[in-house]
Length: 183
Length: 183
DNA sequence: TCGCATAGTCAACAACCGTTGACTTAGGTT
DNA sequence: AACCTAAGTCAACGGTTGTTGACTATGCGA
Image 1 (cartoon, rainbow over the protein chains, first blue to last red):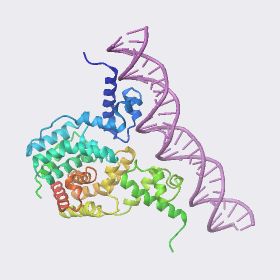
Image 2 (image 1 turned 45 degrees about the vertical axis):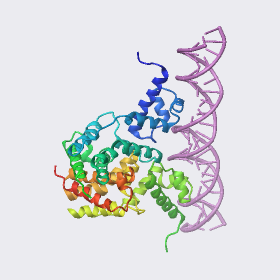
Image 3 (image 1 turned 90 degrees about the vertical axis):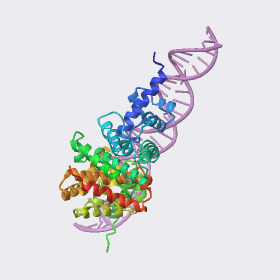
Image 4 (image 1 turned 45 degrees about the horizontal axis):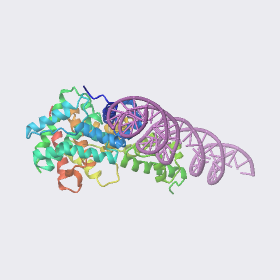
């Protein structure tokens, strides 16, 4: 049987709802009281179990991106993989997007540092490992970020409708261009 | 002689310091008390003169981007113009960058709407007017945004040092690529 | 000189923030 | 049964937020 001890359930509930809320509205815009209310538990339990609000946030980071060892293909397949993860997977899914995470938490210095570390460990370093060239990898990252910001934050007309056939084509185009960059 | 009536000076001081602070740390992360302290005036004067915190923010938007009618060139010169405004002008200058403004205020829905409107009026619609193609214009915007986010928010290694000769080259490359996008 | 509108000061408001410590309750072990 | 550890509850702390209204001071026109 599954372990139904209350402590486990509470911790998990806090983690789940913290994840959902932090990712939808950013760290600073979500209060611990709100997370606790969503999880149906007392506020004090957050401090008890995760030490602090930041502790809970860090836990959600590990929960979301902690252990998966994503293997990056190279060449044109790299573009496919990125498109799949950043476009197909992120869109319409509950799974939090790293790029969305970045743009939602650009305001807080402390959190921004954490987020940056996650992005680097999860994507930047891997893309760099595949491409070999840090400069080109950085350009690819910026292309990814730009597309995400344009869509989520700026809500540009061209990107506003996710079902548009243009979108994936655009993403693919820009990524391929960045991939072929020569310094 | 210059008009030295106190009311004018106070309004201007609030506007100036509000501009500086809002642009450096975002709307939500700056308190009205902080702006008032920087301006050397009482907090209540913000509500008096600008109605509310949001009112002051709107005023700073108009102050920064209100009246200048930027004329956009076309073709390759468009890339030059964008590079000049978004890279050369923004960097190291006190003049607030629109892209920086966008990324700093992505968290607040109310402010985000204002910021988006400013960006569209100031750049997106103009780029679109020059290129004719909304899809390509959106792609250029996303390229611009990505470069800005990669540099300011993510602080990627490749972009961390503004004096790097690579940077302008990268910007130019990605913008040109987006410019040549064909749907 | 008498108002009077405006500028500026001050204290307080109600609401929210993250965090803490004392408390009661329950479960399992000796 | 007695004990003890852990879980959960509750109220309060000190701090910050944006905003308001009553107050005084100043300068200008009648």
